[in-house]
Image (cartoon, rainbow, N blue to C red; front, side, top):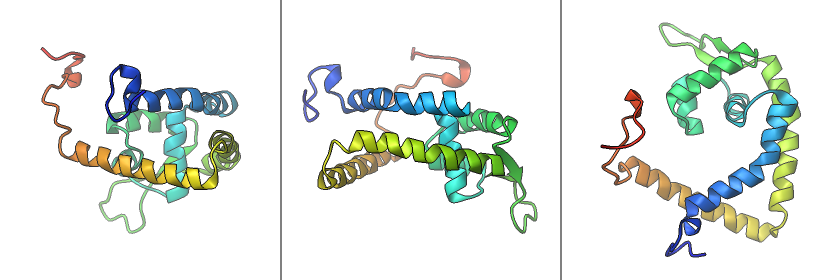
Length: 170
């Protein structure tokens, strides 16, 4: 395996991280879906609203790094389950409604987060505290680079026309 100079697809950082997320996240998915009836993506939005307060769908999409259309679909499901509600912002003269976690949504968060934190501890405690701090710093640096690449247009000229249902270029 070589992150620095990948020779096969398993060497690519994105594949290694995806494998980690898939395997390490499986217990979290089972807990979210089986125990609380929400997907991991719905959990992500709910957690952001509980932790950071009301916000617009666009702000929520940016904060959670999701496409706005996806956020709209997920929010519809959360509203249906009465975990999230639309609220008028303070001094709302002409401003758009925002989304806020309901009491039921905050209750789900309060019961679910400690269990997810325990899963996280079981995964991370294979490292020493210093190693965990180093990993956290390295992940932050890599994430900053990914954001820079994304902001620069990522250097890929070819694009699938997904708005028209396309999956492949040409």
